[in-house]
Amino acid sequence: MKLKIEELKTSIELESVKGAKVIKNNLNVGEIAGIVIQMLNYDSYIQRQMVKNIAILKLCTDIENIQDDDASYDYYFGIGLVDEVLDNVKNEYLVDMQLEEELSVGKSIRNIEKNINMFLQKANDTMDKVGKKLPKNGEWNKIVEQFKTMVNK
Image (cartoon, rainbow, N blue to C red):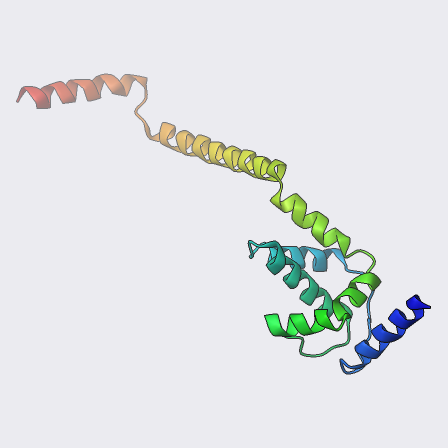
C-alpha cells in the first residue's frame, strides 16, 4: 500500500510543475560529456550534483525555463522531481562514472605524460631548426679566428 501512496504523491507533485513529463530516458554521449564538462567547473560535490541534476532536468523533461539557481533546485528536489527524473533516466550513472574518471589520479598522470611528450616533441623540433642555422664544421674555425681578432684589438 505504501508504494501506491508514494507513486500517487510523486505523480501529483509532478503535475504541480506544469504537468512535467519525462520525455527522454537516456542521455547520449555528447550530453554526458557536456554535463561532465560543466561539473568540472565546480569544486564541491554538492555543486557538481546540482549542475548534473539541473542539466538532466533540462534535457529529459518537458519543463520550460528551468532555472540554475539554488532556490529552483531546492524546489525541484523538494517536490521529488529530481529523484523521479533520475529514476527514469537509465544511464545517468555514466555522468558520475565519467566525472570520476576525469578527476582520477591515473587520468592526471596520463595528462602529464601526454603534455611532457608534446613538450619534448616541440623542443626536438626547435632544436632541429636551431641546428640548421648553426655554422657548419669548417665555418667554426672562421668564427674562432674572427673572435680572436676582435678580442686582440
